[in-house]
Image (tube, rainbow, N blue to C red; front, top):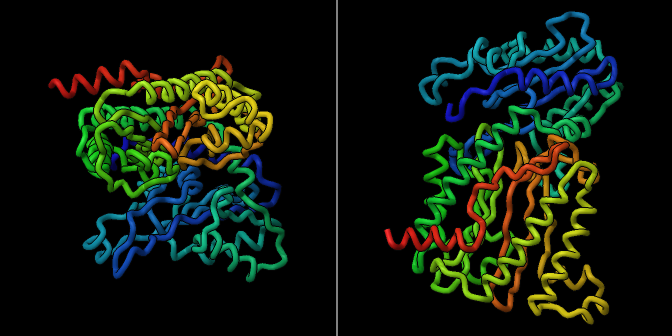
Length: 432
C-alpha cells in the first residue's frame, strides 16, 4: 500500500451517517468499480468508485456492500462481499484481500465471498420494503459508459419491480461535502505532496523545455512521495495554450518570455489536491505579466476572505465577478462604458469564463450540492483567473480552502505565490 493505513473508524462512521439517513426497512446496495478495458488484453490502472471507497475503504474490484440497518439479524445489518483469491489469480495478479484484511480495513465484521452474494441479497431484498441504488450524479457527467452500479440497479429493478426504489446520491452528496478530521488530514497530505512537486518544477522550468518534461517532474515527485499519481489530468500550458482552460496535450516548447500555467494535484489515499500557479518561463515577469498576475492574486486573497459559513457558490461567483470587472478596467481590458452597455456579466466573462470554486475531496470535482451554503468542514478550491487570448497571456491561481467557524483556512498557504518569491526561487535555481 502506497499510503499510510487509514483508520477503519472513518469508514465505520461514514456508514453510520449514511444509515441514519435511510428510510425504514431499506436495503442499500453499492458496487465496486469495474476494471476498465484499455485495449487488447490491457486494462487502465484500477481506481475504486469513490462512493464505495467512502463507505468501505476497500480498493479492489468485484466487491459489493449491502447495508440493511433494520435487518432482523445483527450480522445482516452490513455485509461486505469480496472475490476469493485462487492459485491462478495469485500467480498473475498477486494476493487479494483475505476476509480478515477486508474486515480490518473496512470495520465490517460480516465479510463473505462474492459467490454467496446472490442468495443473501435475494433474502434481504425479500425482507426489505425499499432499495437504495447508486449512480454517478456529478452535474458535469454525461457518460456513455454505464457504471456497474447502474447495470446492477437495472437488473434488480427488473427482477424486483414491486419494491420502492430510492437514490443514494442525495444522501452521499450531503455527507461527502462535510469532511471529517481524517479526510482533512488526507487532503492536507495530498496538498503537501503537491507543494513538493511545485518546488521541483521551479527548479526545472527554463526556456527550451518541453511541457511534458515539466509534467515528468511532477509525476516523479508524486510517485516518490507515496501518491497514487495525478488526481486529474495535469495542465502544463505555455504561451497561447494557457488561455485554453482544459489544455492537456502538454507537448509544446516553453519559450523565453512566455508564461507557464500549471494546474495539477496529487491523489493520496484516494483524496485529491488541486493547485494552479502561473510562472514566467525565464524566471522574470514582464511589467504586463506582473500587473495581470497581481490582479488575479488580489482577487484570490479577497475571495478567500469571503469563504465563510453561510456563503453560497452563487453569491461567491457574483462577488468575484465584481472584483474581476474592477481589475479588468484597471488593466485597460474593458472600460466602464462597456460595463454599462454589455452588462457586468457579459463584459468580464470574455476574460474569466469559469467558476471561482468547486468542492474537493475523493474527486477533484467532488460530489456536492452547489446550492448548499458553506459549512464548517467543507473544502473548496479558490481559483480566479484572467485570460487574454490576444496577448497569449492566461493567469490562474488556485489554492484549497477549508471552511471553519473561525474563518477560512488555506491548506496551500505555504506554497509560493507572491511574485517576488517566485522570481527569487527561480533565479536561485538558475544560479545553482
